[in-house]
Image (tube, rainbow, N blue to C red):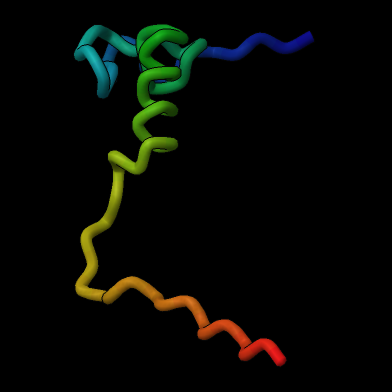
Length: 64
């Protein structure tokens, strides 16, 4: 049985609240901050701005 070792937990800060990161939760301090980050991703808060125009849907086929 292997345990997850913190990777420099004291050196990193939680990107959500700024508390010291806990190796058990990756770069976050707690499961709560992990879920906040996931929610931001799912809502589309993290986006890369582009100059592309939105794609248009193909026209509907004419009905007989």
